[in-house]
Length: 394
Image 1 (cartoon, helix red, strand yellow):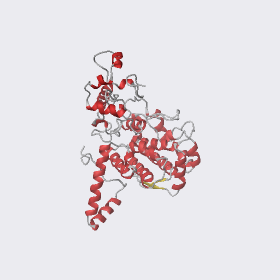
Image 2 (cartoon, one colour; image 1 turned 90 degrees about the vertical axis):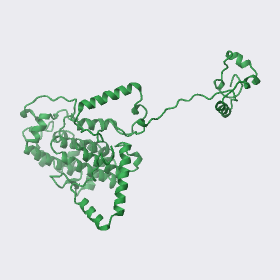
Image 3 (cartoon, one colour; image 1 turned 30 degrees about the vertical axis):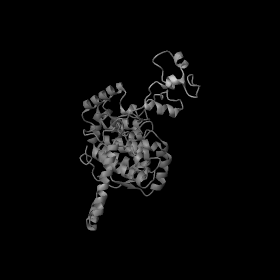
Image 4 (cartoon, rainbow, N blue to C red; image 1 turned 180 degrees about the vertical axis):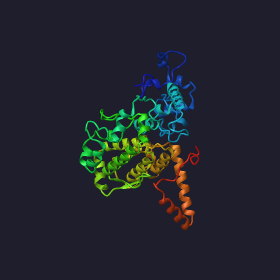
């Protein structure tokens, strides 16, 4: 109940008098208060609240949204659309982070105004990998102590399974029950510079990576390990030179297993990272393209889809291939307004580019289109048309 006019609203809505204390205001007659000039804005607001002409509306806090806050899909851990390479200019990147921290002090960053819909943990993990683990220091070791290389040379067994690589490739191939239930072998088949769940496995070092890349026997067995795991997932390596893959004959059965056991998503992420580390970077994009097509186009593997977009896609070290496959993902993802794996500005450029493509196809002669389509089909591995920063007006 209002203490001034006895109506049902807070007393604070009334404009206080400048001539005396609150008690004096309450004693004044309604006629006196009507003589006080009131702006039309306050009168209308007072009428709307039912508090009469001598009351002011409550002050409501308002957030002002500026242009810098509009794009909720800009990710600080994704340099896919930056002009510099992922592994270059670390000092500049450090300066960028310092600049971001300075902005954070004022509280006016976009992150303080919205919750980004992207998986930031995944984005940070994949950028750390693409940049070669900049904060990781390797221990010095001789070649005979490089356990991952020695394992692939069939001179050192895995732990704790105590299996040599040659025996593994012969006896574990097509033993899908064992490949599913045992979790200690994947760190040996596809080593990384970061630790996994098997504490008995060793992380790669830079020197070990270089030694591995220079050893044909080790690389040959790595490709065999890759083929073994592809078969486990219902995939077949078509071309060892390009890395092109396709469905295996048993794909339906293996896809069901992949749907039911989501820890395999982490295994595939590890496989993609390891391929990039050990000299098979060109194998990454074909496998990611395969999973994008299966999940977004053919609508299979629904429980794998977000791992494909959050992790698999951003394991690709080649920036142009990564851009092309982000474009491919956007083209086939629905609904478009839920696509968060590149900035909105880039998405608008994708839309413009797609419209130009459709216009070109509709205006070209049938013979020209047939020639274009045949040329596209003959490309190996299958890829989207190249997307460049110039096309994006960046």
